[in-house]
Image (tube, rainbow, N blue to C red; front, side, top):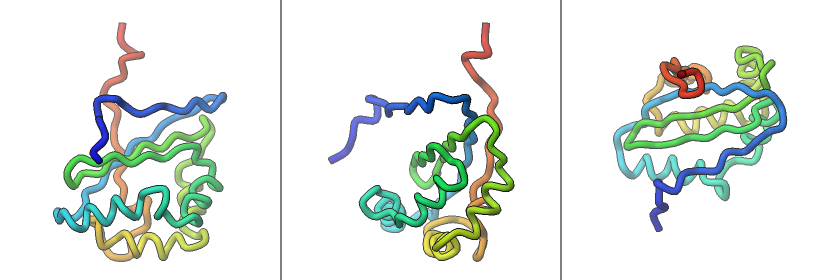
Length: 132
C-alpha cells in the first residue's frame, strides 16, 4: 500500500536547542536493489545495533527520504553536537563496519567507505524563518 506523501511526516520536538544536518547520496539505479535498501531500512528489518550506535553518539533523530535513486538524510542533534567526533566514534561501534559493507552494494560509493565518507553534507540555501 502506497502512502499519501502529501500528508507529510510528524516532527518530534526534543525540548532542547537542536541543529540539523542534511546529507545526500545516490543509490545504484536498479529498482530491485532500491527496494532491498528500503527493506533493510524499515524499522522491522533494521539492525538494532546500528540504531543503538546512532543514538549513543548523540543523534536525536535520523530520517532518510528517497526520490528515485537519490537518498536525502536529515540528522537532528543537540546544539552542541560535534559532527566529526561523533562520526569517528560511530564508525568504531558494534557492527557499524559490517553494516556499511552490507549497504555499500546499494550505494554509489567507494568500497570500504564509512558512512561519513558516503553521505555528502549539503549546503542550506533558503530558510523561511530567516526571511522578512
